[in-house]
Image 1 (tube, rainbow, N blue to C red):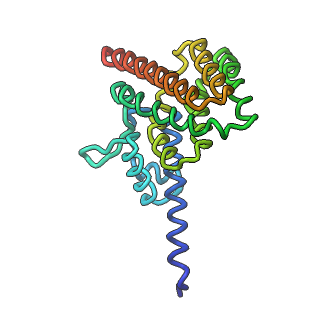
Image 2: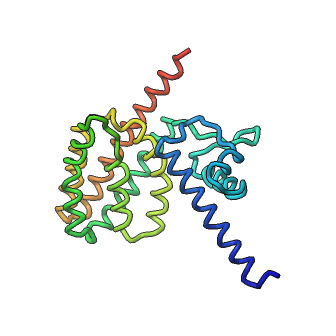
Image 3: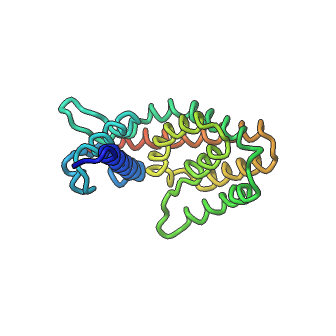
Length: 232
């Protein structure tokens, strides 16, 4: 016999499973584990993730809302391809949001935060110069996460993070093609502005540097798309 608390508990467990499936699929898509254009089949995903199809279906619906997944006419889901035009459109509003977050975060940056920011250019050199370089998105993810966390504005943080999924995925795919000197100089500029403790300076620096970085990635994505279209 079910107790009065049994159904809510079941509902809570389902919510946890759905969130776990969503976060795992989002991470795999953003990290490139699941490539653009791959069809996502509910049954196969449910089997791999050891859940029923219901939380998978909910996760795919949410991923469709983010734009990482597309729902097709035959009622199937497919990982969205890179869209250079979309990245270009995202660049200005996303960079503007990060700039605002940076201005709000500036007074709340700790000594450890400033030390971490100051070390980023060296991190970029180390990572890009490694024998098997991986474009760890320090500028594209690490710095925005810090600024959004310190800004103290939940609405701003959530809005920016929605756009960040697209920039993060593109950066992980094309970031190594941006000269590391360019990335290190941009990181150094952000760190210097943060150390100045001037909110207006940090806001402008972050906005300009991130807008340029996203536009660089969009151009690289465009070039790759053109190459792929020419292949037989």
